[in-house]
Image (cartoon, rainbow, N blue to C red; front, side):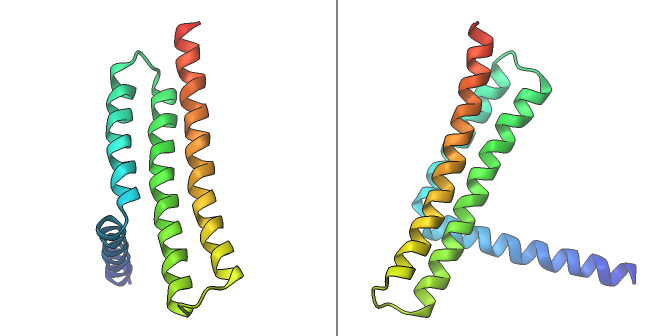
Length: 120
């Protein structure tokens, strides 16, 4: 029973990695977010932040990457259904893009709050 659960976790990790590699190879925006996350992670470790603030900022960057993966999944499903232009297809893709943007804005607000706390 335990071995079966370990194999399930292993298989899920493989599928997740394959999905991430697909997004990395096909979406330039994911590569841009990864570079931005590397820069901001370095900044988070260089600034005199508490563990909670640092964790909050790092987690925000990870969430933006996760949203980008979900956005790509939406795009793939919409494109697989059909290639003709449809209002619902455009709306689905736009909503996925909005999810990434809203998450990124939230992380930006978090950074502003932390930086203002350091300055003030």
